[in-house]
Length: 553
Image 1 (cartoon, one colour):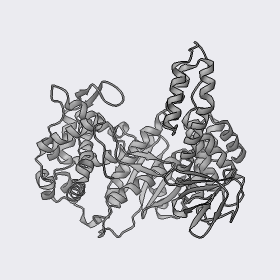
Image 2 (cartoon, one colour; image 1 turned 90 degrees about the vertical axis):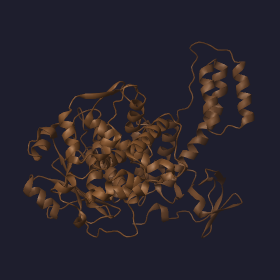
Image 3 (tube, helix red, strand yellow; image 1 turned 135 degrees about the vertical axis):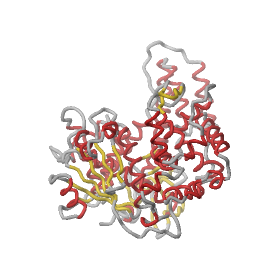
């Protein structure tokens, strides 16, 4: 099936079409198209500069991708916000709603209000008479964008065959911007089955609205070709049915050459698989780009196999009843190439599982899909377990976990100014009493030594008085190890325009393949452990204070 991005539905004139360019310029008027350009109200525009060309109903006549259409809608929302502010501002001033009017002025200025017009609004505000209790409110940015997306979703869904995917994508985006959007909810009710299959909400009683939302997520993934059902005769399914249980469901997806297989006995919670499929694809895409090389060593195509359990008890039992497993939500097992997870019945389950899922999948991907080494390059567990540099294993997985994930556009950013690891290191580095793990000691620990430290010192060793989130926050030595290791990876990836990025990748290769000589900090980075630690602390303080941002991607 050809996608909307390659279909031209209207070859020539349209009465009041809209064209949004990549520089966010918005053009309106009759449009004609040639092979490589559009003529918009007498202006010629190269087609590769166009984010969106749509008709007066909001139906896309050209959009290179869904992401391009979404960016264009954001530009249109800014214009709409300005128009609403222009309409509402005089009404708010006349009603005496001075605070609301001032908020509209700020919002309008951010939305492109000309300086001369802004100065006039400011004068009107200064002379306005305040009336207590006067009604008035500035337009909400999320609501404006949601309404725009809903209109376009309706246009796509009404356009017939070939538009189902784009219409559902736009509708999902509209509901993510404003889950109470009545028009969007009505449209969803219109297109969803009366009793959506496999869509029981995760918490509480059955909720028809949430069930339809889950169904919509799954429909988008299926239509986009992100997932396909796994048959019972598939090798990974047969193996799981032999070692686990017979009543399993499975799906598989691919991203950047990596095959990812999900297996679970849970047949009524596509919310779990839908979210994790998207996180898996974004994570795989991000890691493939970070570790890209012109001379890949790996040539096998071993899938990443993921088991989702129906309960904590079943998850713990699969790990041999290990009491430590009861304290976790997921774990990657090198011995059988399986990552295991369960989805807790808690209100913040999505946030909790997302971080654990990405963290463990990073371990899994680096072990099995990293193109910079082959499976035969790996040391035995025993050898790697005694090689210094274990910080890079947990630190890098936490670094990836702390990135920013947009499961709507599949975009990912690994610069995280609000990363917990950076805020913890920044806060503790300012304390008079030194509670951070000594950097030379941290960098020199092997896996066996690090885990031995956690067992010997299980109690609280530090309390950060100012971090993102809960304050104050206690830390045991194990968690402090993770936080400092992740902060080290943030620094080595970003500092000095990525100067140490290649060194970080080389250090990881040396540790994973048990090349002890490559895990010496001074040799790897040209800095003593003490100097590197001081730089990491300074970097953490600057980032969390907003004094440092990357100048290069």
